[in-house]
Image (tube, rainbow, N blue to C red):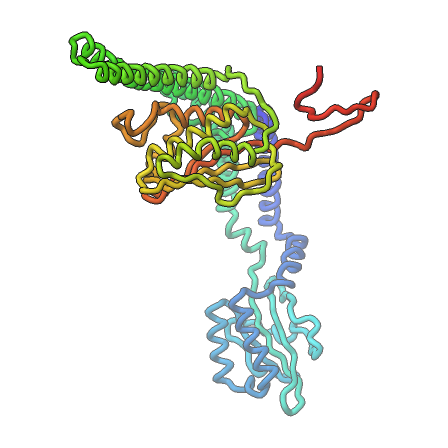
Length: 506
């Protein structure tokens, strides 16, 4: 609701309330001074004709009705009738019991000689058991039940409640009602003012306070003004701006932390092999490698350290390209079953030489095609298997593969029986340079970029990668790939065919 409409409604409501209060006050003064209240009395009669008694009085009436149906002669017992009279008196009502034209019992509360004559005649069908009547200026509501005594005499029970005439009530309460009407006008003005204040002024003050907090650099708050007017729209734009600023600041801080961690990790991972190379070179210069065999051993170590450094630098370049979305993937249709067969065959001899095994949990039938960059997919599989071997603590390391096939995606599972990953480390294993073993010892782990690169590659394929692990039992790594759509084959004009719409002819 717009502010303009709110103001219009508030002024209109104030005008209508004032007019209504004026009409009611005029009517009350007229009734109080003249006593003319026929229309009001008719209204009250219509209401009380349907609802003459309160809930408690109705309950007592139903008890008497039940007695009249089951044991009607009991209603001639004065003691019983006095008990019910006492109950009704506490509820400001009375009881009347008649037998034929005689009154068996009448409450003392009425003090109305004409009451007997004003009661309705017998109606043993009981079609109308609730109604009203008046004697002069006194107004009554009742519920009745007509029945027969055991000797065949007609009987009736009446539970009667007297209602105060409205004119008399008005005369008594006129000063209070006048003050009350004045109070209603004042309260209505206050409420309308409060409504306008709360819906316009307070939100603007909150927005101003929020702007002050942003100016001072405080973005750790949230504006909750769920309104649909112009201020609500302004608040949404303001809250969106605050969130963008907060995200920008957090991203900058996170980038700064990542940059520091990256420099620290790169420095550590490069300094260690450089220190080793310097040590072995100095050993050669100082003549420590004084035999051809020792010299060859030193050179081999220097070479392996240089290869490790070169591999680390290559992984850094690759990760940087993937992180900046600048790596050119070459996607093609790949039969994932045959691809994994080839990977297992390539790894089998190397693993068997280390006493390990690799096999399918349950080999599916070939022909399940996915869209993937073949070389990068192979990098992921070799990296995961390599990690499994590095952290294996079993006498016979065992690696198993499985496929979980869905209509639109395939999930590859690679499971090992190694030492497992601590639960607190699982959310971080795909972060760059993260190692569950914090010493960064190259003998027990790689560069810490392998799984981070795998995550970037899989996300570049439009999939996701995750891990589950049970310490001491092993780890399962999963990644998803999109399934390839069936290749379309259409005849061209010359009788040939164009196949595989992912590789169009040029």
